[in-house]
Image: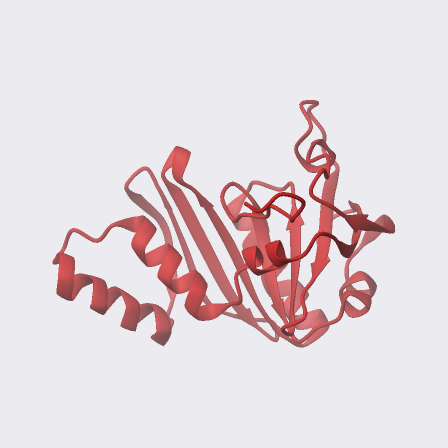
Length: 192
């Protein structure tokens, strides 16, 4: 990463890629007990989200983009709760949301595609086992068929994740072009 630039990556972060919704609309839709604007810079203390203490607080960061995408990162690890959040938030804001997660260190990936309150696709895989496989995505089907044409039945889980992520959204890493961005942080009381 370039010195003095943001260093945002997808790995290990449960995040929502929200299409065509402003930060104002998102804050109005979530059930936050507090939120505050701040400048997100390369030295951001990630302990705000991932502190060592056991906390039931649902802390979040809301990062805007200049390409019609906004990113909500939070500290909730449960796939079912993340999928419900994507669906609920997409209904409340009347937009498309992709919930995305990958952690190569624990061989886990998952995504939920929700559009205006309807979940069209939900997938979760960990340690070689598919735990959730619901709905359908034409984009995902095309990607998986392309991978299968090259690799046969030996589909590498990271290949399908990265290709799908780049096809469905503008990756959060695009924010790394900046030295800082206006952002919002806070706590959610619970699901919407």
